[in-house]
Amino acid sequence: MSLDASANSPSDVSEGTKRLLRNIDHITEISGNMFAWLMVPLVGGVVWEVVSRYFFHQPTEWSYDLTYMLYGTFFMLGAAYTLRRGAHIRTDFLWDNFSNKTKGWIDTVAYVALFFPALALLFWVGMEEFTHAFSISERSEQTVWRPLLWPMKLAVPVSFLLLMIQGVSELIKAWYLARTGEELDHREKVEI
Image 1 (tube, helix red, strand yellow):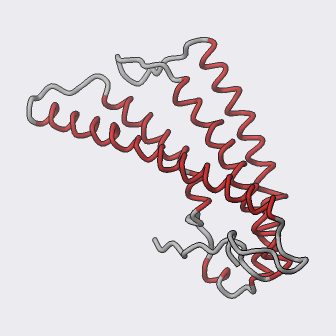
Image 2 (image 1 turned 180 degrees about the vertical axis):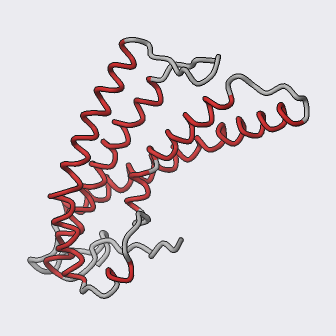
């Protein structure tokens, strides 16, 4: 059953829940596609550094900080999109042998018992780190450029907030799978 199918039996999800799932998934898709554009300045900074260093023998003072900050931000902010796409690591040789209902129950319990508590804690710690860095105008000590660190540290709580929001969608889908054995939203299997 897809999210657009009409509800014909009592076990089906309400239209309000389907709308909620579509909205959450849409937000995740938009934010993931938006954050993917961080790859452009990341690649640009690396290319600029390589050209500067090896062709002009004048390495930049800012490239190292820029690349690790952009890559870390890109990596963190892409986590919710990766969850939406079902691309996080799973032990497939075990997982593929489970029934759909068993998969649903495992995911439901994991989201409630592990996912949400861990992300809530990480969000809280990330917010503390960000607010501290912002309040003292913390700067990187890696290079002489010394950029502000709070923009990169802001990516941590934002990432965990986006992950928790997408987790709500995934929890509802897992609960539906556990109860019915049917996928509420089919995803193509991502091969790495």
